[in-house]
Each structure stands twice: as structure tokens, then as C-alpha cells.
Image (cartoon, helix red, strand yellow):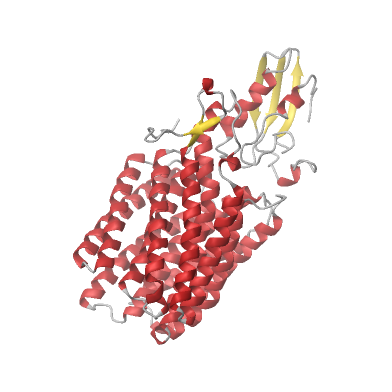
Length: 95
Length: 432
């Protein structure tokens, strides 16, 4: 993860679960970057496949989880497709 | 891009109804098949319950759900989709009912209705494909599958005319051409195309080699094209070449599937993909039985019937059944649980059905399909009925599970629990 992950944002994102795979987005390796600047957080993330119909659910979950962190009032998410997600990005102890 | 709910949902409901009817019909028709009566009307009726009713209705519903994901393009017209459905489903019922009671007029009326429904579906599909985000491998497979569905529809009409007026000559040949163009050109080609997108998603097998899948599509397309023109434009001596191309294409698809299963990063297979694995084993058996069945033809009608059973019921039918454990729970979760997931605890997609029951269904369906095949080939009518009974039991478990999944929905906020079954007769959700 790039930038200042600061605060409890990564831990909060760890509560956002992909409802199909049953793993959280951090363990899945979907979070590419977290930047925190004061009360603003920017999360760069991807999905397991382009056109994933869970996009709105996962993105909303990321926003709400980040916003639940104390001191965070402004959350911006960016969905990227590079580098392309790969199952090797899943944390070894995820399952 | 959100998949619609009602359109695929009504297809899945109808398809599961056809599966239940087919399983019951199998129990009735199994002795006739074991006696070598592969062309007996009950057998033909049951085959069409599976091919048109179960498999094709399922594929149409699944495509309405898949197209937004795989191609980035939702179906062009949901209205046309509903129109196709209401022509097609009653048409299949009329066709099969007419076959079972020997009413030719009813069969022709049913064929006309379902044929019109298929044409409306194909027009809708053809209008959708140009809007795809990109023309990738899945796109080309679906385009080819649509073309071959049209071909098998035309040949089906010719086959019906041939039965009445004998315009095409050998009945076994025409039946064989029709069956293989439909099974390989429409169903297998669709399986190859969607598996290229779905298997990596379902198995977490991204990065597995893809060449066998490409080869499978090319071989199947070549074989089906040759079959489609073989009756009038190509000497019949080319028939074995077409057959070998199809067998090689199916084998290449099996190799591709094995590569995906081996590359899976999941700690264990989910119930749906276990049932798909069973279907692939049975498809492998069909690939092995196909060439001798076609070569011996009417000289060995039990082999022809057994081959049809393992291909249609096992290889293709159970492949579709396995995907129900993935696509229907997802659809229900997406439309009912997803919108409230941020506000309260909701089950995961895979928690919408009971896994031990799914495992029981897999065992029953797999043993049933294999048992029917072996018993029909051996000419053992009682054993064929036993296999059909196992298959019917597995079907019952599958249909019951899907029925329960379709009824699940979150509880009201003040309900205290996490969810409750859907109220009977609740209005179907529409796309968000």
C-alpha cells in the first residue's frame, strides 16, 4: 500500500467482505493504496474481474468502512485495473 | 453493470420446472431407451425436455445475467426477452406434450411457437453483441453459438418435414446432424465461451493456460460447420472428419477445464463446481462413446441411446445444473441482500443454500446419469429405471434448494432476525 495508511483505515477495510468469495478486500489484495490527509482518505482499489457486478457493493462498502474511522469525513475511491488482479495477490493466511 | 432480476429469474424457474418434468419423464422412458428405442416418442420427448426445456432455457436466462458482466452490454431489449420467453416456454410444452401423446399437430404448433421464440431471442442477442465493450473470445463464442442455434432450428424444421415427407433421406443421419449441431454448436460452444470468463472467477484460476479453450472453439466451429453443410454440399464420406473435429474440440475443452481446476487457488471446491466437475467426467465419457455410436448407428440403437443420455443428461445437463449453485444465489443476493448489506448482517452468497444437501444432489445426479447410461447400453430396463430414480431424487434436492434460495430475502429492519423467506406471491424485483 502506498502513501500514509494512517489511522485505522486498513483495519476498517478489513471488515469489507466480498460476499461471493467470503474474504475481506484487504486479504483479497484488492486494495492497492490508502492515502490519508487530515480528515480525507483516498483509497485506490481494484476488483477480481472487469465488469464485476459486485462493484457497487464493494465500492460502497469501502467508502462506508473508511468513513467509519474516527476523524475521517471525506472519502474518495478510485477503481483501477492496472496492475490486473491475480489470485496470487490473496494473502497466504486468508482462507 | 447490474444484471436484471426478473428476466433471468423467470427463465431459471421455467428451466427448473422442465428439469423436474424431464427427470420424471426419464423414469417413464428409461425402459424404452434400454430396449433400444432411441427414436420412441417418449424418449424423443424426454430428450427435448432436457435439451430445449432444461438446457436452452437455462442458457438463455444465464446469458441475460452474464452479458452485462462478460461483455459490458446488457441485453438490448428486456421486452423482447420476455416476448421470447412467453413464446418459447409454452412452445416447448406443446411440442413435448404432442410428442408424448402422438399429436403431430400439437407438436408442429409447439415447434412453431418455440421456433419463433428462439428467433426473437436470436434477434435480441444479435442486437446486443455489437454493443459489447470488446470482441473477445467469449464474444466470438457467443456469436458462433447463436449462429449454430439458428442452424439447428432450421435443421429441426427440416427434420420435422423429413419425418412427414421423407425429403432428406436417412432419418438417423438427419437426427444425428440435428442433435450434434444443437449440442455442440449451440450448447458446447456457449459452454466454451462462458467458461473462459466464469471458470477463472469461480475457481480463482486466473492465469491458467488458455490455448486448449481457443483450440476447442475452433475445432467445434469447424466440425459443426461441416455438419451443417454436409447433407447437400459435402459428400457423406466427410462425416467422420466432422465427428473427429467435434470429439477433438470437446476433448480440448475438457483439457482446458482440467487446467482451470488444477490452477484453482481455492482451498476447496464449492458445491456448484463439484457438480460441474462431475459433468465434465460424463462429457469425457460421451466423447469416448460418440464415435462408435455414430459409426454403428441403427445397428446398435442401445449404444446410440446411451450416448445421447450421457451427453445430454450428464455432460451438458449437469454442467448447467452445477452453475445454478453459482448464478441463482448470486442473483438473489445481489438484488435482495446487497442493497441492505451496509445496514445489517446478511449471509454470504454461498450461505444461501445448504452445502451438504448440494453434495447429496451431486452424488445422486452423477450416479443417476452414469447409471442410466450404463443400464441403457446394457439393455437392463430395471436398472435404467433405478438410475432414473436416483437422478430424479437428485433433481428433487436441486429444485428444492433453488426454490428455497429464490424465496430468501432480508428480514425487515424491525424484524429482529437477519432474514426471512420471501412472502408467497411477492412482486418480482426489477433491475436497480
